[in-house]
Length: 376
Length: 93
Image 1 (cartoon, each protein chain N blue to C red):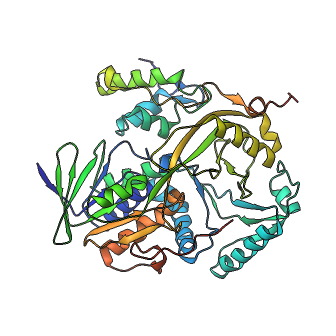
Image 2 (cartoon, one colour):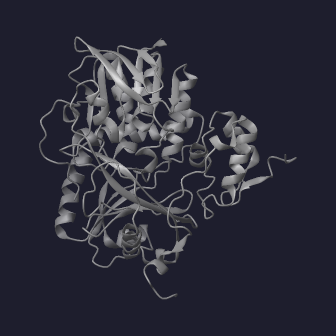
Image 3 (cartoon, rainbow over the protein chains, first blue to last red):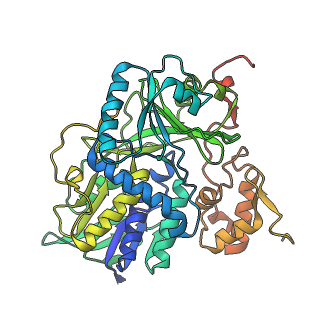
């Protein structure tokens, strides 16, 4: 059976549902294909943090746009997505780390971001349970925050359906037809052929495989990151605490009162692995208690793992590709949930109007890969 | 079925009612994994041990899906919730 639509979006995570929503809003007939259930990949496995404190211009500006979108989701979707501007506090335990934050802050401030370097005493006042031993101070962004990834994706997907588009789960893409360097159709495992002139690869950890279907090389490699969540306790307004020491970690108190967090793996585990380890449970417990000693009394409910989709330089690949009609939002490097709304909106804008609202060269799919994004 | 769906608690950890579960199913959320993530059922201290089977029973009744097609959600470690101090071998204080 042959069907037709204006744009096929591959992937039911944040990037795909957001872009699909803004394409539908621009009047395009959208079909979104997700091989499992919505937010079953990296989006639903992230800890829901949303920050604007980045060290590169395009990412910072994209995140400022994203935060604006998170703020307005309640009205846009008619449902609460648990957005909360609970802030991000990057802890500095060395002069070098403090200097790096100060440097980033002056750049961030020049773009109008509300961010400042605060003393250890001010950190302690913000988070009374914080262990301030060896703490020099922190980079504090009060307008950063958190939201619930499942609810955000659900809001966008419901929006696509409301606007007349289709969101189909359990529908796996197996090939993309390209002729004379132009996208022609997408085929699924269930035997469907969907003719379209526009394909958006928002397949997250599988972006490379979906790219290869059209002969496009996307150097995006999944690597495993683990996370855990505790039981809920009284809400104490604990912001995302980021400790970039080699044995640090990051966690936030969710609006549900639960603490949710993770750390950057000591050794890279490449490939599509979602295996949880006892080592992570023990290690993360120790790291959390070092940052916030009172957490020793809390129960851990659950641990899991998900994939970061890494590019060679740690910066996303967004926009048109070498094949006409084939776009991607790929390689979001662990920041997909927070970047997704704005990248989805800006990419939909580019796909329908042919221009970017902000300079996007940094994210260009055809770039050569240089220096890494640097926060630590 | 229960007379008062508003006061019938399906998930005791998050106080999710029968009415809320049925509304979500009516909205088209019919995968146990999606119901879990949208409603939080099975994400509290019981980790689905209490509510999981109840939610699936409601799904089967409402959607007419065969029981074999409504699978349990993924079980994640630890098997039971553990206080951090026990993981770290710290003394009770």
